[in-house]
Image 1: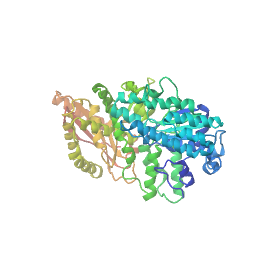
Image 2: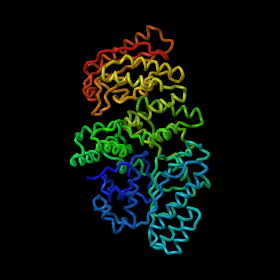
Image 3: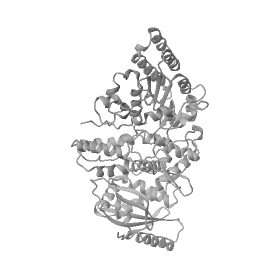
Image 4: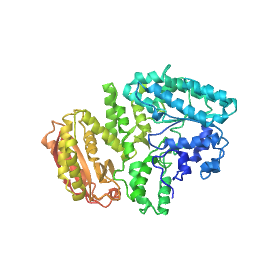
Length: 580
């Protein structure tokens, strides 16, 4: 039985040691035909490295004799191109470069020098002793690259350059040390810019991957290093898994006797958490959305180990990326930071926005709204979701994992403003358990009201019903039972919040909740508040008989709740019967 390659990106190891492999090699001819210098952006931990390593092995001239062993069972092995096993291959992984500004340039030079020495030893038989020594003795990486490609070309051998995580250390410099330090390495005579100026004239093909377009724009202003395929429809499925590929993996292990649960049950459990990425506007609604492959493998590793889903659907390795994402808000200009916070709050409240995805932009222009939204897209926090009736591009939070990121943002923003929830966390967990299992909701409602009052008295920016909704979602997401769905469309309107089971097969929740929220300003009269309460009750009653909601209740009993806030205070709340 094939082992699962969770955490492994070494293509040769996966093939030779018989790990399960999802074949993406059919796209190789398209990559060859579109350009010699290719640039691809995808979110972190999405499977970029394993695809890059597959390409490197495919083109490596040293693999001529073992080509069939590595690729015989894959599409490209049965339909090889003329470029197969033709190149010397130089690979750099810039995720290992140190991010400390004092050590950065030395670490970069050391990382590159070590890789070039490995390259020269790997292809030692192609170089004379003199040529080998001429390359090794160079003190600068750029000079080493010029020399190694010059001597290779003199023998008629092309060289392919692969750079993985090209923006890993530079993005950290931008977010932690600011724009001036970033510009020092990417502009003028900066060492990173010098490096890229040498790449294009020296190498025959380049394959460059990363997360953000910012470094790329700053590095290449004034010269074009490659074709950006990140948003092109033919390459929508190049990284990640389609649902068909996910189902095929599950079925393989079911046939092997390692999984007993039905395939549909597993897919329904994974889909809300790992699916719904669309990387090309033209593919929305036409092509299968993509699953995050690393998160699928995380889930499957738990299934194979104990035939049950992980206790937490969010992979801890993805969760560790949260501090990196939070750096998006760490900017010096207070007005710029507030604009970004407003966008984050909007997305936490409504799950979507409209905007244009910009293919590249310099760090200086990050403050523009479309550019910040574009950065969220490239980080995987947004995805294409069609157009609205005005023809504007809709960008949506793709799944529960990314929603969790936004809600964590809100709680961290609250902490920055002096709010702490640590003391109430256990009480809130316990009250939500009683909501889910026993249908006892009053303690949870009162605690949520107290927490909102505590927060809003600190943060004066909260003054809209949508912000109340976002804050409550952020608090309610801290539970093992519910997916918190905002603005759920029903036949007779939109309910503000729906708490329904998260789809896990082992979920013990017996109750779900439709919640209507009303917000009154501080000077609202008692009569106005009473009218809001009556309106909330009426809205809940109008959902009676709506069968549309049944599909996400998973057999639980539905209750209708309403909350009415006046400024910082929860002043009215109650239950209204909703019969389906």
